[in-house]
Length: 285
Image (tube, helix red, strand yellow):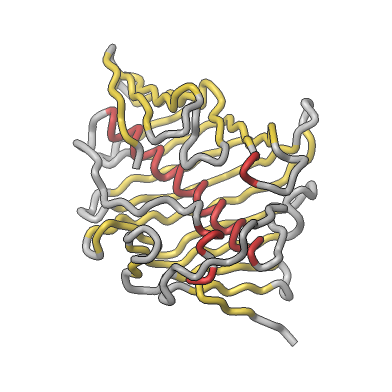
């Protein structure tokens, strides 16, 4: 008999600590370089954080989706309006995080609103070559207020490609998504990356994991202008909320090149955007 386990998401705060704080849209004019870089960074980052959160939720229920080990047990602080459904009987296995169809206030966590569904399926262990893990969101929103929530929907496929020439596990990642701001501006984003596990693979603690990302991306900005992005210096991701270093170069037809620089290793939400001979520091959201 098939067994489906349902849990209140309020019982897995530790598992969801990787989720980003929900923010209302604070993007500037839809055709400037800062907006292009910030929008791409936000969609990219949210897909990473959803992936981290799902992996940790799975681990909290004894499913070693990413070989992580939770410390400190389970803390009941999140609201009962969010649930987790886990199915480890059917193939592929699946896990669903459902924040509901109305804004769900996480008042005991970060006082942000969430709404919608996050789904993951997987065919094998995270370390097993050939394993395919699919992440997706459905009607997923986040925001500071219930009437100011941005919608970010995406699909993400992670495939274990085995060891690379450096002897590190690496994963091919294909992501496609859209963001619709609460004031109805739309941006699209897709990426093809290689994710190399460069540190922490010999321990069960995700806090010491370090990944290096290379690859390309493309999409349309909030003003409908098409762009192409190339990771010109590898993006480095550790336990921090954002990439801690690396650069992405965006090109657009008949417009200045835009460079997004995540910095030199500091764990913060700061980056710089350069275009047309000018550089601006931005706060990532």
